[in-house]
Image 1: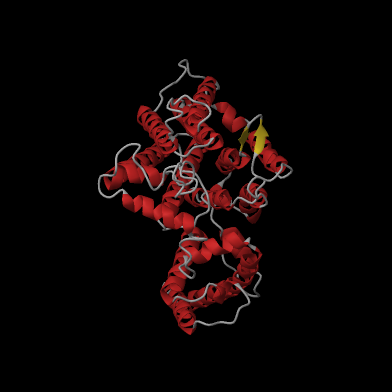
Image 2: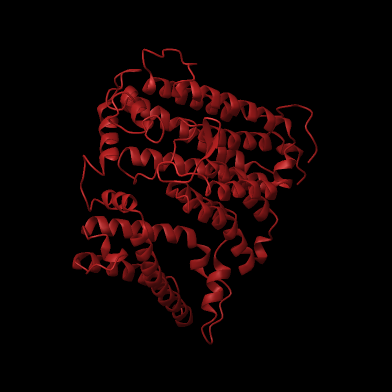
Length: 464
């Protein structure tokens, strides 16, 4: 690359304006939900909205620094940035626990959450690593190293524990799939251990990511429809749902038959049967592993899973947050109650805990109703589509991969946060991008966005 003479280069103004609008709407919602007559000024730093203005100002300053730095830096120093953010994840494990988790590093009376910034480090290093690979000559070590880039921060985040950010890191699997980094080398290594079997490629490995998520979706639907105890698969409790067993085995059989029918001759069918048998073996091992993992979860994490699956009801107890959140969203009706008129989800009423952070979608929906929610979702969708458009016009593989990483991280946060506000996802505690109150959240998402805008602004300087 060569340095651009302009400070902002050719900035993508539609995306930048969408970002500014989202930050503004978020600040106005924080002000509305946390407002008290004793502290009417939005600049009052004793209240959440005053502190949020400070965080937004710092984010804008960091954004200016991002544009002062040449875009080559992010690719050149991707590894040091990754190591720095990972070291913060190690450091935070030695901090005093807050609300049962070691996720914060204190700075004066404030604090930062390293897990939020670890997503940036992982996105940069993964983009650097994959862009340097020859996708046509993949081997097991190259795939495993890409996975290791993600696994290291994921394990450290799980030790905090922070289940929400851990889940968000799985979004990078879609980025790997988009760039052609399949699981073929790993699956082939296992299959070719069988005597007399030699495969060059596998349909399962090439389509590993979509297959994985389809099977997870089928498993959850099966459990919900059959109303079988979650312990049927994930604990040592006696099996008490024969209908669930029949549905699950029937589903797996149908999927297996559909796979086999894709292959015409006997040799190919034999190969596919071997793959399916290995898949059943892997499923059994995963069931046992997940079962032990489920038993090792904290009680509140088990409760959230069971409440989400509808296997337990406790609307005024353990399911209070989700129940109150859905009530607040529903109370907004078609056009909402008006700005600063949220009653169910205000901080003062405390009917919806964390209504300025994880559940900030509730007061917005209560104030602006269905119409406002549609407009907010449309704004988010515009941002995501614009980022994908930006990704596809890049000349640099590094820029493209990073852009897709940003899109998937934002999508995960957006979908899961709104999902848990309306009862479609378990409560795992992740913020709504650019909207939720919190310094680490607004700074990390802003830096992520500004780096993308900077890379895109100098895309024409890249030699093909």
